[in-house]
Structures are given as structure tokens and as C-alpha cells.
Image 1 (cartoon, helix red, strand yellow):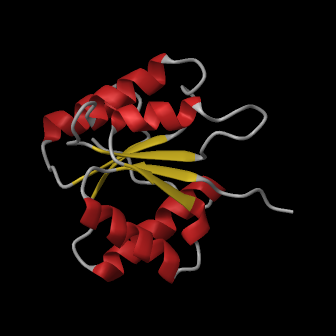
Image 2 (image 1 turned 60 degrees about the horizontal axis):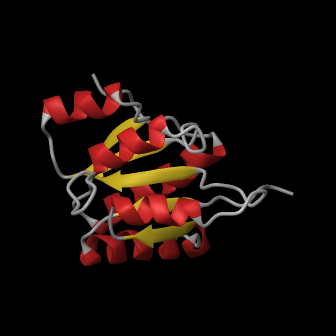
Length: 142
């Protein structure tokens, strides 16, 4: 029996959450993804998980969020021994090289630019899922 994939995505944009949720639903994986609105809610969500219930296989963080942005949340996750092994991907519209490098330096597994079309969004959802299964590796960010 294969283990259930659990992905946590934090994004303050309701439309972006809806679109990625719709993409996961389109490929039959709607039950694999949970959503929160900001970095504080990521930490709160993770804090409610009782062991031995597994932590998410992947945390996806929008870069620009209120309260705790993606960079701040990434830093806190990697500093906390309970969560430091969870893979984290930054998911943003920003093409800023310095932000990308900072996120990678802080321990992000990758920095993924948000898709423009729904077909690209479906491909991205598949990549997130396959990354969790160990069958896809995101290209490294220079």
C-alpha cells in the first residue's frame, strides 16, 4: 500500500488557491492538498498535527504573504527541528534573482514560478505530487 501524499500550500490569494486546487482536482488528487492563507497559519497547522500522524510531504509557500511572508516562514521551518526535514518549495510570481538565491540559501528545495495558463498549472500540480513520490526533481535554481 502506498502512503498518502499530503501537501500544504500557503498563499494569501484566494484565486491562486482556487486555481491550484482546481488543478489538483482535475488530475484526481484533490485530497492530497490542504490550503492556508499565510505563514502564521502554516505554523499553526503544523502545530495541530499529533504524532504519529505524518507531517506534510511538502510545504509550498507563496513568497509575498501578510503576517509571515514565504521567506520568513521558510526560515522558521528550517530552524525548528520538528519541521526542518519537510521539503519546502517557494511558489511565486517574482523573478527576482536575489530573492531566489536567499530562499535557496535558507533551505528551500526549489523556487517555482507560478504558472500562467491552467494547463501549466495542471503540469505544476503533477510535478508537486511526483516530487512527493520521489519521481520528479525540480531543476536547481542558480
